[in-house]
Image 1: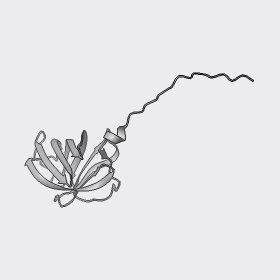
Image 2: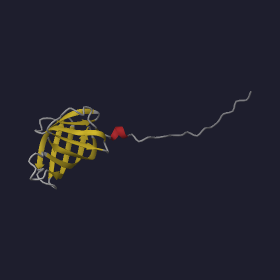
Image 3: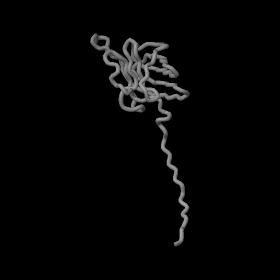
Image 4: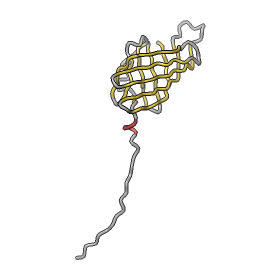
Length: 143
């Protein structure tokens, strides 16, 4: 019996490691805050809400690094009064900084006193543990 050695080419397959660079994900608890609130979602991050916050800013939640994290609002400049207005906000948690830039896309008509909603586009710039991710989202503020 004769043994034959075969030299087989080594095939290396690599897959993008999206999870290692992706800091943001949809909130695990999509119902953590309800009623009058802020909310935003982003198709580039995934299905569901990526930001939830109480209207009075007493609680703000984002999923960062695989966990729903409570963020504190530490700085705010601008307003959300009219279409085109810009509001910049900075949130922090231990080792995490989130900069959000909101641009108003729609406000209630002046003659509709029952309307309490403002719609916006928002860009998030998130830094955590030396990693950084930016993402675009849309959302609304109101009741």
